[in-house]
Length: 319
Length: 319
Image (cartoon, rainbow over all chains, first blue to last red; front, side):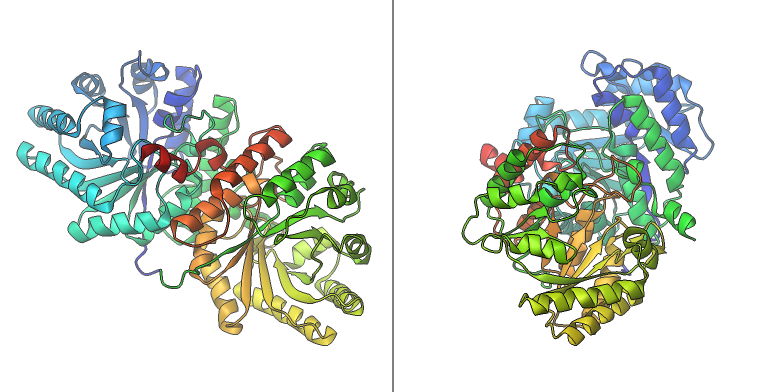
């Protein structure tokens, strides 16, 4: 247990991931209500919206209204997702409310890059070079290299740790050329291929190559192993996780609307708490927000604590 | 990874756990259809029914019809749950189809013993002595000591490893007095209090006291940590698990009808497969049975693989 971190940083993506995939429509007021409630739970990072093409993602046609409407809480970092210069400009219009930081986003699967982005890996690398340079030209730091499909891919199968290393090297090459200093690697299990042993191998290989780099995991619970994967990650020294309250979200690549979304924030917090790892989050408050999310989307969410309550709540009753 | 078992034995309890808690009614024909489908998946142990008081558990009023109706497959062990002499006699009527074996069942929580059984721990020990002697008098082996609420209790809070050791010692004392040879300890996380670190501590303490005893875990996914707990258990040398297809079942003690049931068999099999641990189960066949279970109960089940498919299915498509 001595290799477990003392503190885990949680990046809440429920509003962004959840409301992009819900058949909805979800009102801007409900989105804002959820964000404002999340701000009171002790979370320090909340992704509030996605500045994407509203024709492609109708659920985020109201990104500006949400970005303008929530009430920022001092000490909490709010972010908006974007993929291109237009999205960046839309985000920059809210730079007094949002934390803007760039990422070099690559994919470990050739098949997924083609299917999801309609690009070859070479075209994607060229695109990411331009993306990094755009940030630099605007004075916005690019500190993160992200790798999607880092543990496997529905269109390509297993992804070897060596492929992830190669993809990160590509990202580091782009960063060096653009003059960016990378401080974080984010490995995404985009389609739910990770297993604890795969986490151990891939994160182990990355840490061997870059011993001092901070690593974040973006886990999906597509096949029910996300909490076990998070636990394996923590044991490998991972100190940052993306997650969604109530397990909001889904997997558009599973071909099934009922497929599970991201790892659930409440379960991640419970796991940390019971191991004595600080997250700063008040779990009982967070469970209440999970219940609000379930009420807003109008169907049962996968987060189990919404329906079972925290251990501390029962401990207080039993005492 | 060297301490992981090479083989894990899975005891499927979906029919018994699932159909006792579903608001139903589920027809005997559907129960039999599910059992017969499970028999074709490679599972070696299937609990098919519960010989309980039909006034208390209306969902199992048809235990005899189901026990008589399924088609036993050679090499598969079928069992029926029972709690008293009357239940044992009902099970013995099917001794040509069911494997009958006794257990000394205790609870690590005084509060739960009182709430669930309306007995003091002393009364329960006396009852279990009579239960063991009854089996011996009929020539039925009693080989298992089970401990319910071994990791925590909604009515009592945390359960210390020392309390589990004491409860197992009580069970071993009963067995010695009745002349039974115990070969298995079953630790049940009846209300979803287990966490990986708690599994490590409690299983570790039990193995230190009884280094050669085989240990089984009965895990509930009440708070979403069941797969992580199973993984922790395997690393501690646990080689047997109870589980339910599709995650059938629930938690009558969570006070919420939507609370999750047992650890899902498909997710347990996936976890084992990806670590190279043999279970004998054909995962794709099992997922089909999960889909059948979902159709029978008429609502979405928590098992994620029902909705996302196995990794091997995508590997074949990607190849």
